Image (cartoon, rainbow, N blue to C red; front, side, top):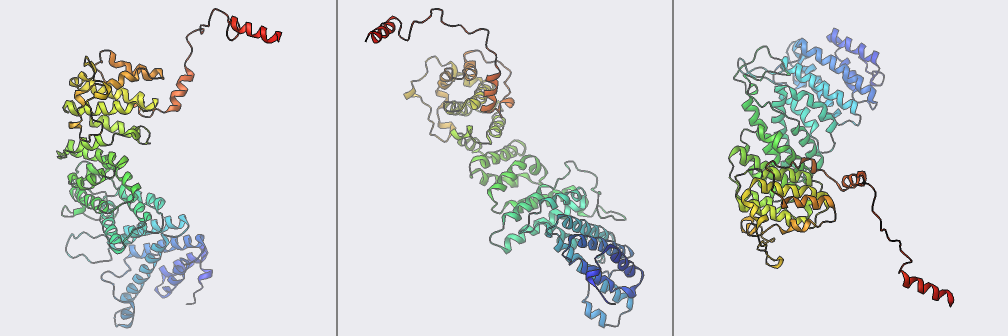
Length: 517
């Protein structure tokens, strides 16, 4: 039949072509007109074409009118002696593949509406093709899933050229299904491995797309009897399928993240991964201790990345009995004057408070942290001091053995302080032999709230600790606003003897002499 793609883009014409293909195999060539609309430059026409293809091939899949099995070459079948039904099913299966290939290309279309519709249509085909498989089972109760089509969908999301953050956020709704989540982890693992093996340098866009997809995968914490919330419906499930066991999901989850993290990631992604590590990655791994290599290498980067890596290491030490002797030495090395001025200051002290919360830490170690913080406090801004001074006092409350640093009767002279601020090992810093003379110095601070906070050590420290949580985010602007809101205590006393000139009588005498002259 004659085909006119330019005129086939209207809704009415596409509806007529759709009915022609579905009602008569003699009109099957009209499918070319429908597919041609997908090549249009008008986004509205493309969307109409996608909707028509969705109805067309969705119906054909439900009717089981597509060839099932290993797809032979189209020309070979058409030239052969097989029956008309067999030739039609093979021919239409090739048209279905052409449609899917074009929908995969549309995942990179400039119009988000087109991309979103293409994604939903492909996922519809995944569901229908899974319910009516286009491959023959190898044995009874063989688990079938349209892996080839689904791999193309995930591959379209993980492109190195286009930022697919919005499209991936739309895809996340499918990750609620157990089978989609399981196969997404498997496919993402292979795509990341292939991308890094084919190209020496992978684009930042690819890494961002991959991280967004990987971080959207969430596993259930507790083991159920069987995971059966499937997107692809099956008449019956078998406990022999890996996809129904949470243990297999954990293995796939672990392989996915280990495969991702073994590559050299951009610095910005290091931070994002480490922020999510303690609550979104480690609890779901089959063997969390396998993260030790990544976390220890991240500790050597420095700054915020080292701090966040220590958080992950602390969980492995605390919950999984990991041996890492250098943990507190690494944390001690992060204490420098810049820690009071960086944007991650609040997170640092929140985590440091967590790391030093145990009452079983040796006194020399706690003393080293208290002394280092006290020394750094001499040059810290007021907003940081109002947080770090209670922090130091809390350390003394938890470890009474360190209070000798406050109550030592005769503190050392400044030039004879045994504390070594240059020493990187807290065990060799001699902090416990020193005293916290820095806190006494800060009692003379120009800001009254700081001097008041430093004066707490002159009293008996209360047993309950002071929560530093409200002080972690304190800023100079907030302190200034608090000072402005303070009310003066009544009238301000003035000098009761009135002055006579700038210099008293002598000043008056000079004025008279100047007048006579």
